[in-house]
Length: 306
Image 1 (cartoon, one colour):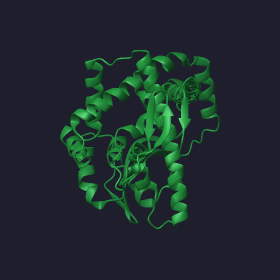
Image 2: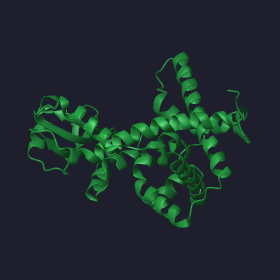
Image 3: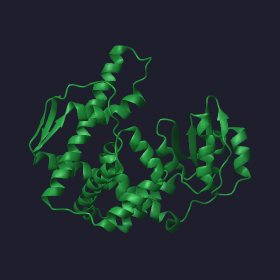
Image 4: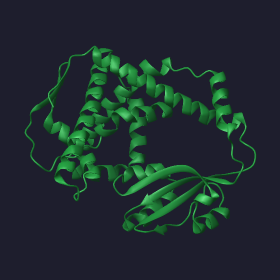
C-alpha cells in the first residue's frame, strides 16, 4: 500500500489542508462534474496554500496574476479528477472499514506530529477533528477504489527488473559517493524542535511535510567533489543512519542524514531488487493512473466555466 499511496498523493494531496481565503470571493460556479457543482470560493480555498508558497509579494502585478491563474487552473484540474474518482467510488459502493480507517488515521496523526498538534492546526482554520475525520475517510475511500481499479493492472516481470538493473550499473562510477537525506530549515526557531523529532526517530521527510513553508527535503546521492569540505569531513566519520548537527549555510540551516556510503563494485541485483521494483511500479502506475483518470473523465459530464 505504501508505494500506491505515494502515487495517489499526486491526485489527493491538496484536499486535506485547504485554508480559508483571506479575501472575500464571489461564489460563482467554476465547473460542473456529473451531479457535483464546484465553486470559485472552494477553488480559492484549495489554491490558497499554493498562492502563499509561490506568489512572491515582490513580483510585478501582471506576473503575479499570470501565476495565480496558472495555479488556479492546475488546482481545478486536480479537483475535477478527485471529484470524478469520488463519484465512481460511490457508484461502485466502495466502503472503508473502521479498522482500515483507524490504521490510516493513526498514520496521519503521527505524520502531523500527534493528535494535540492536529487539533491546534484545525482550530486555527476553524475546523473540528470530526470534520477532519469525515474528510479523511472520504479520501481513503477514493484511494481504496483506485487501488482496486489500478493496482491489479500493474505487472512487473522479473526480466524488466533485470533490464533496469543492467541500465543502472552500465555506467557505474566506482568513486566514493554518499547517499544523503537533507533538511533545509529556513526558520532558526524550528531547529530545537526538529532535533527533538529526530531524536525520537522521526523520518526527515515526515518532518519536512509538517512545515512545507519553512523546511525543504532533499534525498540524493553526491560525489565527494560535490560536497563542501566541512560536510565531507563530518560524513567520513559518520555511520549510516546518523545525522549532522545543524549547519548554517547563508540564511538557512542544513541537517544531513547519512543513508549509506557507496564505493567500489556496483550493488548486486538482489540488493537493488526492491528499489528497482518500486521505481518501475511507480512509473507504470503513474502512467496507467493518468490514462485511467482521463478515460474516466470522458464518461462523466464535465463543464468548466473558469
